Amino acid sequence: MTEIFKAILILIIGVLIISCNGQEQEIVNVYTHRHYEADQQLFDNFTAQTGIQVNVVSASADELIQKLELEGAGSPADVLITVDAGRLHRAEEKDLLQSIDSEILQENIPQKYNSPSNKWFGLTYRARILAYSKERVDPSELSTYEALADDKWEGRLLTRSSENIYNQSLLASILEAHGEEKTTEWAKAVLSNMARSPKGNDRDQVKAVASGEGDVAIVNTYYIGIMLNDSNIEEQRAAEQVGIFFPNQEDRGTHINISGAGVTKYAPNKGNAIKLLEFLSGKEAQTLLADINFEYPVNPEVEHSPLLKNWGDFKSDDIALYKLGNKNREAVMIFDRIGWK
Image (cartoon, rainbow, N blue to C red):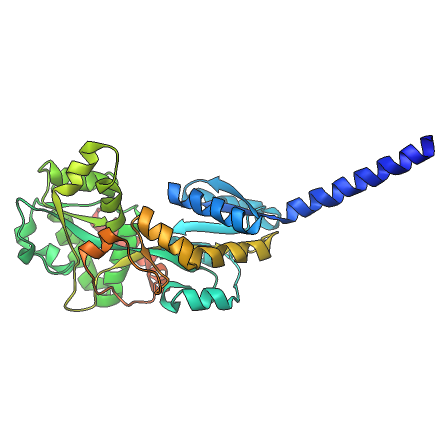
């Protein structure tokens, strides 16, 4: 009986080990900078459909990139999700991502949103627009980013600090369009036109316009969508007091930035990582991101949310977004030289 019992026990342990190993294979570990309820809902939907458990580690983009560097080949991460092409380019430069060959991703996402080497893929985009006071600004006064350098905006402009990646990529787009000398002149003029020292996030800029501290703010569209649908009445009221203007519609188009993702270089669950990216690029996930988070879907077959439709169609800058990453250092240097803190 003892030998039989031992044999049965060994068999049970073996089955458990096989089962556990199988469970370990059915996971995907995500390092993400995004912090939205819509993302967790998407991860839950992915698990329900595939049986693959999504384990999430959240931190700032810089912290996650540093974490991947320190972990090296021993990193448990399979996917890096962050915002803006500048950060995605930074991760690619540091050799933290691997090239992915996926027909689904190629079909769902236009190439301009991806890195040329397919090491990262755009998942959503946001327009960086001018939020203006409906009381103090006639939208006919607005035209381009470049025109914000005009003297008439002295003491009226609001924006975040130069440390913010959104502003770095906006300046990189102007660099691509006009070169270093003209871009430096523009940045100096905009800095001198500011109503206060750059500070706060995009929500704070909208609130400052609503309170009369400034008249025009440079912000991302989705922040206004979130504020208009916030449970906090003060957030709603602030957003209701600003109009939305898409700059540069008569020339290169409005600057956009993206949320995107890549499969990490040493992903232990590469297959599951690719499946997650393919799911996030699909119609179901893209629709949810558009409807709940007020972002523009990169998948051209997905409709915009009713709020975004209400804002109207706009021409976006057609620059390949990886070029913004290429010019990030130069943009940061210009900010530093002119004293844009």
